[in-house]
Image (cartoon, rainbow, N blue to C red; front, side, top):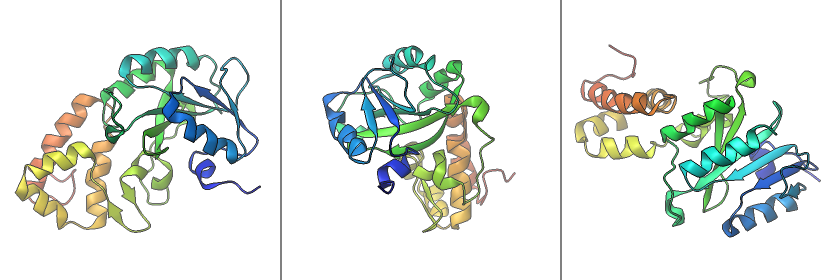
Length: 223
């Protein structure tokens, strides 16, 4: 059986065992889709597994459930954490730009990629921090890292992260200048924001992005 698109996108392989942890009823379709692709779905984290997908709805659950699971993760484990999309209708205090993800550093894991799981759930993939290389911003690497949600090297299009989109929409001059930038320059601004590790840093960069765009700077590191 050839690897299905969803397995390929999630870095999973036919025959692997996936620990499906803390799922809600809305995650049933995801389990069915993965099982039809050849994965063995387990709902018991005590049974050896090759990959894990943890479902959380809020920051407290994120920390507590990850703490319970972290000791069972191996360096080679493919580990996804799924959280509700804003459009899902599920109450959540998590989002892609939330600083709460930084709390997971205590478990020695780092986010490396994101993917839409279905119309309800978004997934973030984490790896052992010792296995993670310094972020590579080259076009060839973007589809496999955390920037792939916003940047498409194939079509040379850039989608603004929600917080940056909202900020620029209230600053017409900055938005107009941004819209006139090349693909490469748009990419550099988005990478600069998304690569910020702390919420405070992201907030500071949002302000600086507006200032730089209004000043006609094509690159966020331009003085």
